[in-house]
Image (cartoon, rainbow over all chains, first blue to last red):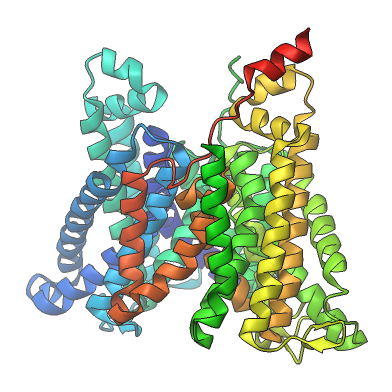
Length: 301
Length: 317
């Protein structure tokens, strides 16, 4: 029983990370109907930039562990967000009016480009995050020893998701994003600056992905330039699982995928971990072809 | 106009035919992998380019073909070229079985499911499923192909085997594209609802395109196994599927000359950039973005079908 709860909390933490990355996919997809394959590599950039800032500025020594990591996270998110905007300008904006598959190939090209940029800057070997940035405490929760790190990660991702949900649902810019997602042409006619909306989407989505990268670095302690592929694919799976384009769907999908993976690895076979995740996805899509929270779209004739 | 095109293609074909006499082993080998990518690209083009199904897991069918060849050849010592139809058949059956329940998924949902199938197949191969795939090390000791008592072993000899297969593939897919079946697929891609309204059984045609593409990929798997003599799961990663997909869109989706050109770009460009050492893949990624921005439709987009007015008038009379 204890193993079950350990795996469950682990799955929830990893799921929170997946959900944060999945939000970037789903937001871009919602507005542009584009699978941003380079999103996973922006996440990698988040992890590496976080490491660079951490070792060069040593904020955690000046500001204390918690405030230090918080400031670090904000800085990483800002930098990765700006990279997202540049990515959109260079690789996607010229292709707005072209066939969708062309934009997908441009995204794949951008992904290869970014991945190799990371490799050339930081080298191909694993990079190690310094240990004990955050105090390595184990908290006793209802009689279960759970590492503080796990709780913090889940908590942070939930807070970020709640903030995003509030931003999308309650603010004026969020309303504009939703309008542009429903119908770009109509949104334009209502006086919404769609280009600006797309820019905001490419700021917020990658910023969340960058935060997730930092979290992976802090949680697992080591990062590699190819990890964007794996996490990106998982997060994209999560976004589809929940119904792509749907923001609460990405959150549910991410957490669910993390839990399924952790439990599958523990109780079925660790070697089949990734296979189980995809198998569940396929089974769910057979039953619900547009994901768990995806709406049924009526065919227009 | 048409004659001019035939002359250009003819000259290119003759140049390619003579190229092994002038190139060293290394470049002939590069041309061999271009050929393999060209056949894989053409088989995927039927699914992605002609039918408009978003398949990013084509490496799975390629892997099924290659492993069928390797297992049957190493355990039962059946000559590898005889296994060509068997490999095609297994890959095709596999495609029908897994695609049947998912073929109705739309666009990006189908994309992630095909990625998932590709990954599941790769993971199954690594985990030595049924104890016959040899795990992460793969299978080695696959026999060289033999043709009329002549053993094919040098890259130059493989060059003619592979490019003969490319020629057959081009002929076959060209005929298919001109046929009623090909037109139905194109209609399906351009407007599914209208196609259904005109009496085209969409699920049936989609499945047929998927299966046929898989059959062809399975046969390429057989040739790949014969050429390498060792196969392992890493040859069938997600990256392979991405390359096959990329070459179609870069060259011009739905266009056979485009796909052939795309194969040269995808297999050839990294070799050309080899001088830049570690910057090679960076440049390749950048080139992909740039090519899409400057040639949105691909480099050689398909030409619209033309029906000369006099033949149409003949038929209606």
